[in-house]
Image (tube, rainbow over all chains, first blue to last red; front, top):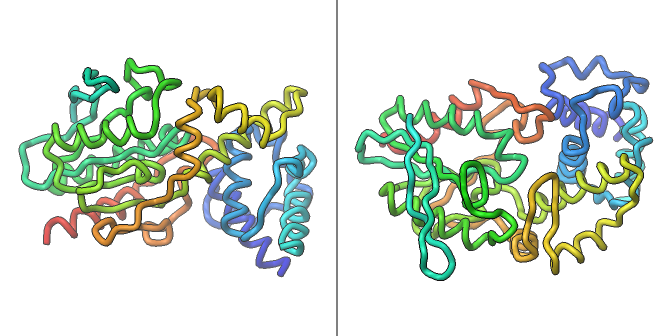
Length: 87
Length: 226
């Protein structure tokens, strides 16, 4: 399940960041997101969350949205996996 | 391509003049393009016009109206309701003699009922509102202000709300939050898989993709050439 979520999350991030196919494969759990990528502003993060809900079939409560989730690719993936386990 | 005004009804019977981007050479097949909404309108604008250039090249006239309160409009967005946008699209369809419609994303929530056509990447109104609301909450938290989404939305429904730079009336929030893509036999939904490539409305920076514009224009022009 982890690998399926991982694959979907990389695809969503590719679309948000406009990466070429395969480029998101280079993300590691330590790759910085919010704060490290200037184009990832509040609007882009909001779009990312809504798309994660649609494609991963999860519901994200606004109270759960925390800057730490978006700090690295690893933290975002952990969050998505935990959400899907709840679903 | 040129900009041309169309008469747009105002509440109370008056009319305002709104602009539309038009490719008009008096051809028989005439496509009204219903634009994406809010931040997505900006990110989808270039793609939308690129599709229109291709439709023009394929022998189709097409029209992209400004919605009241957006782009060059003189109307105050804070006073606009979804019904005003629906009436604007209807007025533009009438003025330009549209025979078909191509709706992009949230533009499909506002369609005049009579035109057959396509709805690219349909989206629920509630998803658009939720994303805008989230952007505001995230930006507020970054600025050290802790806002609660439900409280902000409740206030917005009575007083109107500034979301991501868009001043939205309570009525706009209420109606859009309930708006669903129309399910009509003569309005064909086209999902992103059909077009291929990554969703441009998600892009953090506005971008373009000629292959996607080719794909969408091909679907419309081949259907209308038949």
